[in-house]
Image (cartoon, rainbow, N blue to C red; front, side, top):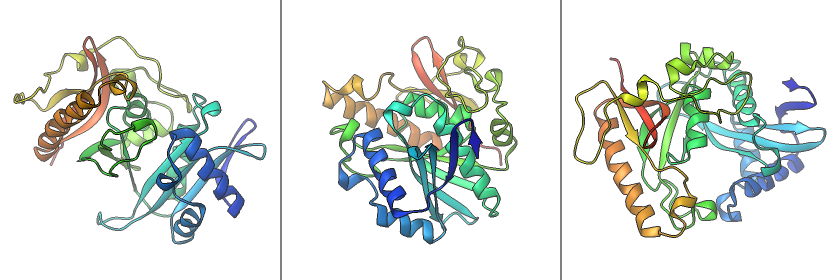
Length: 279
């Protein structure tokens, strides 16, 4: 895949895998222990996974790494890591890497990609649910344990995104046709990052789920804090409490058959749009 001087392709040499590991450390601020070492990525790729990088000339700007997944009853991969160097961010590379991953999967008869992300990270939520049209049916509390880096001492709670590659929303998103009126935020085109926000629409007026109150509606809003993780840097106890409150509500909603399908901005801050899954 090419876009101007940018080229996206699978990694080939041990040196490229080593460069990817360094890019992950730079992007996430993780210690060595939390970044897959090059031999592990090489082995996973050799065993049926995929690792692709975005190159400008000979320099690797970012990469996506996935491993085979066998416990969902259908051909799938789990996208374990996506990282873009800090000086190359906000150029749409995350989208381009994911679209390359989609093409790679479809060429091999794989129709589902899963990955985890921090549900409080608004930029990632927009990328995953708005631009890529993934959905979230699973909450994983403190999934990795203590990870450090930008998370400090906070628990590593995660949403598990499911990217159903042949679904009509994903097919439209792959063509750059994500619609603001159907997703509740600004449309994005041709690999741009979903950074801009539209004015709150009808989705921002949905019933809000709060502690102890679950509206009887097939579509609801689940708020989460803006400004994560910086907002909790000076108050670890409140950060942990916020994680627990959110996790309890998400767990109940997913158990009741909802999945997160979008994210919107309301007058009170960001919120997930959850929709009851159809039978």
